[in-house]
Image (cartoon, rainbow, N blue to C red; front, side):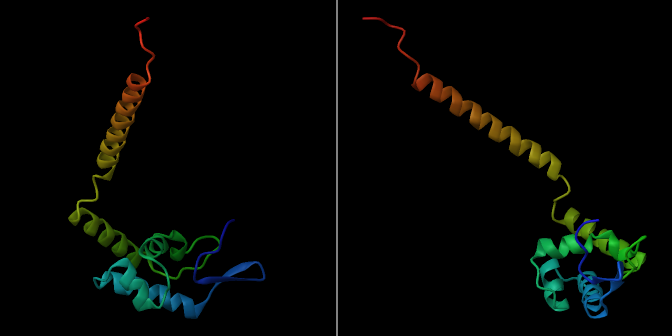
Length: 130
């Protein structure tokens, strides 16, 4: 097992919920579902993370409970947050990122190829002999 998720502590080899921190996690989900951004929701909940940390935290399935970790968030809340994240990404045009990444990589490849061609042409030894 790796790093323990925020909101839990280990006692006698078992994960237990840290109630004070778990309340912050629940508030994070509530604020996000009420329309706050990841960063704003984390601030409202009193969790000091950047937006990507809040997003990663909200995607952590351990909060649903599993063989080792007890549940902090119910499945309905988790699913609503995932659906809201998807809805916002779609509204902002972020769902076609794979296509955009492919275009970006192709553009970089073309630029690097052109740079190599220019470098080869610039430093090519003269074919004329004196």
